[in-house]
Amino acid sequence: QVQLVESGGGLVQAGGSLRLSCVASGSILNIIAMGWYRQAPGNQRELVASSGGSTKYADSVRGRFAISRDNAKMTVSLQMNGLKPEDTAVYFCNAEVMDYYGETRIYWGQGTQVTVSP
Image (cartoon, rainbow, N blue to C red):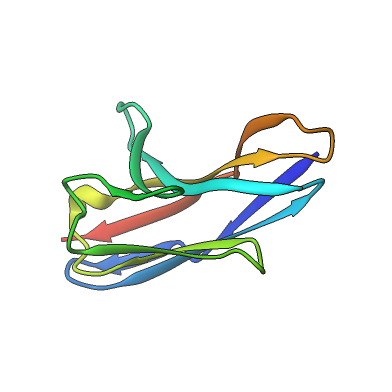
């Protein structure tokens, strides 16, 4: 089993910054990719940024957010600058993991709330 634990959400004023972090633990042989998704009320869950063979960003956050990974520590972080009220959502850590049995699965964290006030 694999666990993803997020931290760093909170309330911030528009224009401010937050840093989200996620650490993976458990029966991990290799982490293929890690990333961040978000879901606002009434909306579908959407990709924010991912780091695998390449780095991807949603158009809405490119230039404001930066994703980084530490493979040795099995962590992924999301530095969010220039936050806007429309960035308000629950942010979920995501990882594509190969376990000790050679199976690859997608895992999700429990989510952390980010609220940006006008």
